[in-house]
Image (cartoon, rainbow, N blue to C red; front, top):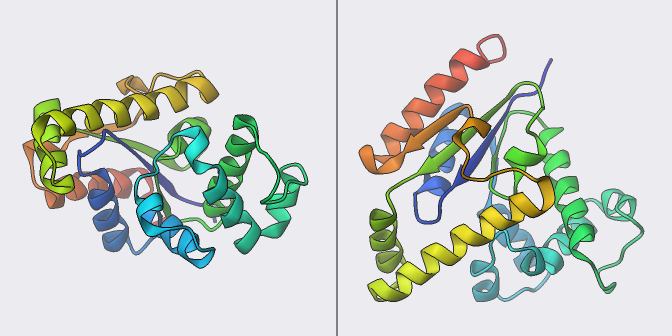
Length: 214
């Protein structure tokens, strides 16, 4: 049976991760997001506060993804070039390891992938629904300030920096425009509805696209 995959690309503080979790819960699918990676990181002894600050930045994911593969799938780790966790890694090494993690997840089927350039890596894959979660910048700044417990100016810098990092990652390694809505099957503005409403829209789209499979 063909495998079904949903990728979630999200602007920072748009609620993408929370929406993805609701989506996975409703469909009964596996979700691969920061919570999953955090659990792996904790198993290999990375400080929780350090893990919490890491996003799609190339340099920041090196140790985390290397350890993920070393712990959970050694065969994939060595297939990525006989690297070891102690080896100095280039950005290209990291991308290959990231893609190995994504590929391993997709082989399970019925999975929701959050971030990590999955929508770019799987751009031409069959049975895949690419979703982008957006919200007005002002709304995301307010959300980030509340979430991080910081002032508006610092929240503004964080929102812009995180968005830039995500955009740069996709452009650098896949030559795709992270902001281009034509790269997605569905774009959802989370500020216009509740997270539950956003999940409803995506579930509806998934049921239409994956109808023979759900």
